[in-house]
Image (cartoon, rainbow, N blue to C red; front, side):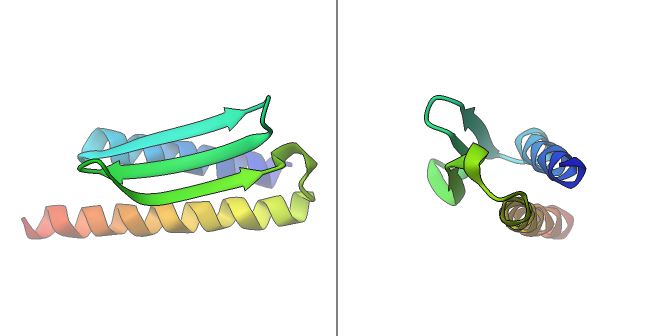
Length: 89
C-alpha cells in the first residue's frame, strides 16, 4: 500500500501543479458511496483527460497500482506539454 500511497501523492501533486501553473482545471474525487476514484483535467471547458476506477476498494492491490501508475503517466505527459508550451512562449 505504500506504493499506492506514493502514487496518490504524485497524482495530487501533478493535479495541483496543473491547477496552479497553467490554465488547466483539475478535479480528483474519491466517492466512498459509489466506490469510485476519478481524475479529470479540463482546458477551456474541454475535457482533456479523464480516468475513473470503479470498485476502487475491491481492486487487487497490484492491479490498482498499475491503474494509478497509468494515471500518473497521463498527468506527467500533460505537465510536460504545458512545460514545453510555456518555455516556447
